[in-house]
Image 1 (tube, helix red, strand yellow):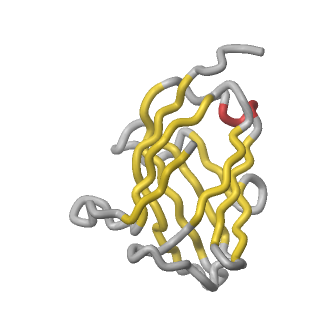
Image 2 (cartoon, one colour):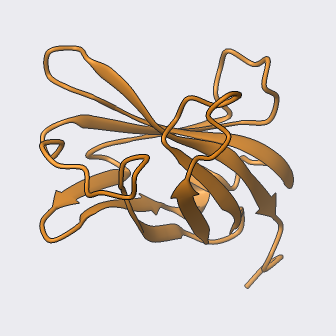
Length: 131
């Protein structure tokens, strides 16, 4: 499960939200998170943007270990709150080795404007080991 909070580490991380949490590499990753700006206000006008979530196991990697993209694995909904639904099956996340990963969430408008929405650290765990 992921937890998002306004990013107070803006000197080392320009993304407005800091992400922490853990996921299992043995089951489907199904979760919904609320997207806000640095002040905690709702983000609007992003319903038609393309959203990307990436995990990297090394900060110097230029390639992601896992990439999820809307609308395949991510769904953005704008209403009373703005939410991002993550839906990745176990086959998708099973390739991740247990350990800590850097997570980045970004959006891109149809005009090509990219916005780094969130960044942080998540742990991938091997739990449950099997069913």
